[in-house]
Amino acid sequence: GAVVSQHPSWVICKSGTSVKIECRSLDFQATTMFWYRQFPKQSLMLMATSNEGSKATYEQGVEKDKFLINHASLTLSTLTVTSAHPEDSSFYICSARTTGGYYNEQFFGPGTRLTVL
Amino acid sequence: LAKTTQPISMDSYEGQEVNITCSHNNIATNDYITWYQQFPSQGPRFIIQGYKTKVTNEVASLFIPADRKSSTLSLPRVSLSDTAVYYCLVGAPGANNLFFGTGTRLTVIP
Image (cartoon, rainbow over all chains, first blue to last red):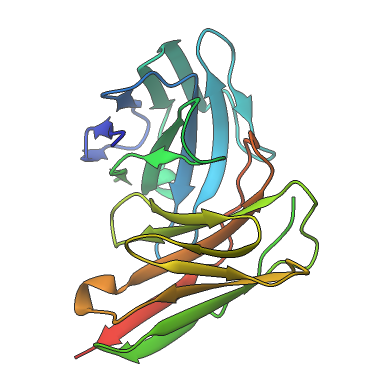
């Protein structure tokens, strides 16, 4: 099956620093990748949709200058949390979609837990 | 986007069949119904998808009545490892902004 990896799986950083999270589709090409954020005991919230070679589309309320998304290739998308603050601490999950398979089927990565001190 | 409503939580004993119902009153003609499973600290995993009537795969069945305003995920003979949150999503093919509602937290009791 389609596998999506994320790196790192967890990260702890100081307030004010930037953190980059990588999302890779390991055995398929993903024209579209998605970034979600999930707070404890809550549902996933879509942050942005990224298409290879073009700018990401951000959901309402998500600061594009704070959450920088780059989808430079068909197998890699990155999310950079700039000037992170404690309220950015969350579980960040990426997903990727292929052209085949079920409609709207997204393959999710294992997630990255970000803790900002 | 059709919103969905699910029970917040359910408990079940091992070996029982579990049915989780999702309401989606505003489902559109070209919307499909998809269910995902999420374990703690992991990304969601696709379980099953359907458009109408009944769909069955190796892990679950999905029942969709004729009016498609609801759907029921059926998990046969659950085990402790089925303890997870189950999300019902509704969307048209190619939709980017899939809406994960509250989900249903299923706890399987020994």
